[in-house]
Amino acid sequence: MPSATGLRPHTFATLFGLYVATGLRANEPLRLDRDDVDLVNGVLTVRDTKFGKPLHVPLHPSTQRALQRDAARRDRSCHGSGAQQSLQRLAQV
Image 1 (spheres, rainbow, N blue to C red):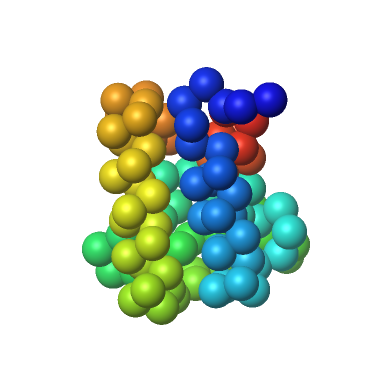
Image 2: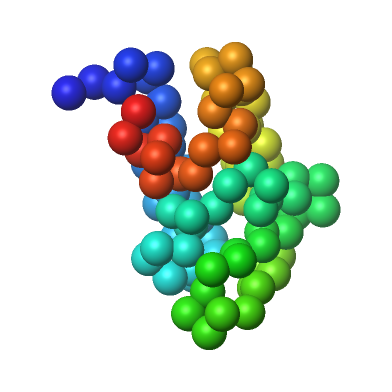
């Protein structure tokens, strides 16, 4: 079933790219919100980790650029309403 916004393939590409580029555990990227991604400084903040402590993950510049492109695409497609949604919820769109 196709997504209503057309974002599903881009969301999965972003999700799989995060797995490869960061080494995060399976559920960690699914719980990220826009506020957890610092696109200026290139750092992810994973708040709900296995050991209960926040994890700060530096991003490679190519990953940072990919996330910036994804955020811009999402903003254009969702008119800002998708800004705070997690990747898990967006994968269902």
